[in-house]
Image (cartoon, rainbow, N blue to C red):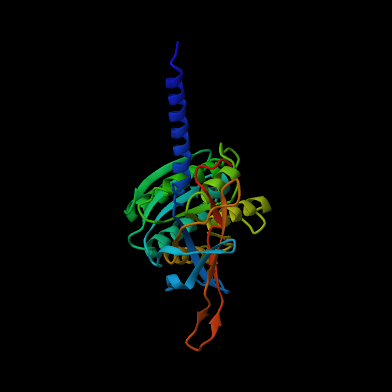
Length: 313
């Protein structure tokens, strides 16, 4: 027969262990929130990039809560850049346009930060990594030249290409990371969806700059333009829709300036009140005061927020 005193002792000991575990859990601090970063472009009301701002010029808000900055990256820092080139027939069946794009890309490379590194993804019915990350501009130029002479194919896997490129850019050598997407916004065969590509961008800090291509102003249809605008917006990037050779070159020049003069804001988020872990953010930037003591309102552009890691959506 079991000793009742021994059984009583074991039950008491177990109760003590359980009670102690509850107390220890209550006293243990909650896991610290992981610091986040936002890449931010600042422009004036005319869309001109504003350079030379300081950390004190920025404020990050989550709802009504201002989040203190824990790090700040000034402008003109190098970036890891992925060039994502649509090689489907709807884009590359116009040899003159392909030559114009290639020339504008070479000019972009020549005026970009000298310490940038690049990779190249081309896609038609599936994406292909033509060039892994490298700082060798000659190698980048050679990869772009291969795209220019490639035989165009009809199918388009834009979302698959973006998913591949975001994953590759997320491991970039530099803290500043971006994609330069050249496409008409059409997708016909991707395994991933627009929702998948959108989520991948929101969960990264990779900025997407898009050159939206068309044969005529009406050729970039509403759905294609809306898709490209959405991809640029959720990443804090920008869509350019050039209609002439001059506008194409100007678009590359503008996106090159914006990329080179992005700011990086580091902050620790407040707890999210939403079950899906979404943190909606707003960036405010102080007015610029000219030498003539005139205030100029500025606009800060970045991704609109982020999801907490590990929360199912």
